[in-house]
Length: 367
Image (cartoon, rainbow, N blue to C red):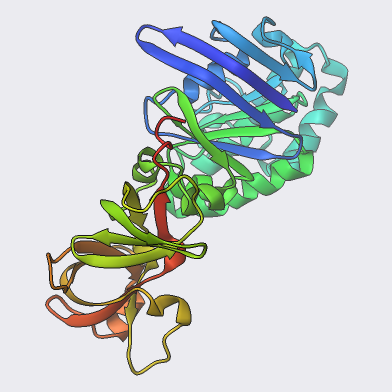
């Protein structure tokens, strides 16, 4: 198990501040954050390439904070793989074993890891003749053949073309699960992180703001900062006008929105920030039965504009109310848009799914 306690590091004006995380054996931890947030800097601290200013790093209970990089037994897959162009696949994979003076075991160990990663047929190939996916597997084999206690992956899919990435996400996770090596995978790609993580952390400006399962973080971001990083829209200022054990009623630009009452420390009359996930805004067909959980938040609306992506559609909606006409973004499969014969200017019924309404605790941005 990898354990990091109160780790701090400073370079210039940038700080890693009080980093705490644990990655147990057979667990896949994804660290998500924007460019410049400190993801790679943290990996370098774990590797021993950056000298921390405070805190402790331990593996299986052994303090390695002050160990040299070569004494830590950590496998590392760099973003650009750093394969040696003057060596073939076998020589690249075996490089770490030779450094550790295990020459007698070299061939058996290399072939064992090559079989696990399904690259046995590549073993004599020159590096220049590998595809992006093949190069990634060779670099991974080189990191794993020395049987590291921990594996660190720095944006491992950045050099893979889009059509192949999705398949490789799951393949990589399945391989590492077999080895039971605790893994930290850093990325800024939200879909990638969600697909592979057992547990996830969000790092922004050198601080890990939230940790949890991928589902917990994507459905219940801790605060507005995390929500915006995750690409969530419909983040507004509202006011609590009524609450009980089951529901909180919000007011926003003349409309009342009912959310689940799952946050403490809120007071009636309090101004708050809230978010409605775009995929929680539904188009209602009155000729079909309406789900009970949607009936509390039904509104008349008008489609202002529609934007299409590969398989999804984003619509801007005016909510037609007696007061202002608040605007919300709704997201759903493009197929629904066509099936319901939707179009700009059309007046529709819409509803907000309560589970997709997130109220940010007033203390969340300072925790």
